[in-house]
Amino acid sequence: MSLFSRQTIPAISHCKVPGKLYLAGEYAILEPGQKALLLTINHYLEASSQRSDQGKWQLIQADPSIPSLCFSKLEDLNSADCYWQYVKTALFLCQSLCQELGIPFHPLQIHFNSDLRTKEGVKLGLGSSGAVTIACLMSCLNQQGLRIHHSMTLYKLAVIVMILLKSKGSFGDLAANCQGGLLSYQAPDTTFLQAKVKQWQTGQIRLVDLLSQDWPLLEIQSLPWPNDLTLLIGWTQSPASTENLVGQLKARSQLNPDPWMAFLKQAQVTVNHLITAFKNQANEQILTHINDYRQALISLSQAYHIPIETPALESLITISHQYGYAAKSSGAGGGDCGIALGTDSQASQQILAQWQASGIHPLNFQLAPKLDI
Image (tube, rainbow, N blue to C red; front, top):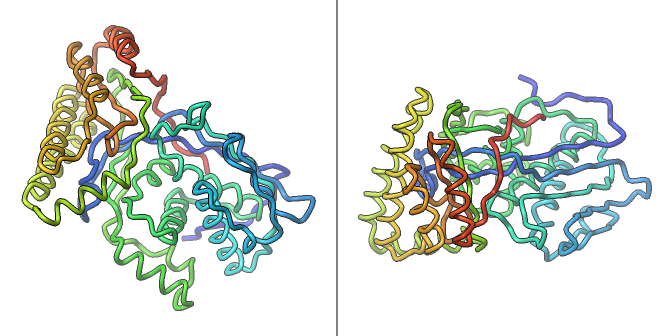
């Protein structure tokens, strides 16, 4: 199966990548063979690119807190800003791919604009690092005259970027960003991938061969969202540090693994029940299992003294329960977003009003469609 094809180079390439939220499977997804449910929302990171008329690279972010960059060669790009590290590595990967395929690699002017952050530049917990990586890959390859045929190829390219940056994540955000809608996700075998990326870096295998082969354990499956199921999203206005919380969990679970193993067992059962419930459009079962996963997270938090459910998130959940909605933290917790699901659409406005009165900012997001690549 062909991964890429040559295309006429447009004057300007536009792409937009949706943000993501975890519905269930947080923390457990870090273990091989575990699944998570994610969804994408209709707020986007957008990129537009065109050939540079000065023969230099220009990277421009609409957010004034992130400095724009101008340089002659990728090797000259040396920014301490974490945001540009994702872009730099994605551009290097695009350059390597073009060299392998015998395609000239041209400097570009790339503009980024994101509504995955507030106007003040604060992250909303919607996966901005993954989104900027994918937007960079798409916009750069389009302007080199290379069209990606499949969302899976785009996902794999983005994962390789993250491995090169030594990311410890599950890459679930990348799967959601590339797929769109609601999906179940099982992470690939990272030990296998790290070894394969090392082989590519040392010239033992080609990049296209790594992209072409099946990745052990990897599973991505689209799921239907019930028409009569309402999704509400609230932002606590307090950014969370996923890496910090995950780091605490890993360190403490090594000293006392029993609660972690019990959590994994419960998480696997609950997520599998959720997948079946979504396939069957069984709303009451969906709500039950969302609450079940919340309880699993509470047990994990108590066992290892990790602040997954902050007072603001607890308030969000309590208000939601009063109106018959299931609710939980989304992602690592410790701040960022919470979600609520229910079938009483008339109650949603009351929930949102009470959230707002409690200092929780309702996010007016809808489920995003499949990514157009």
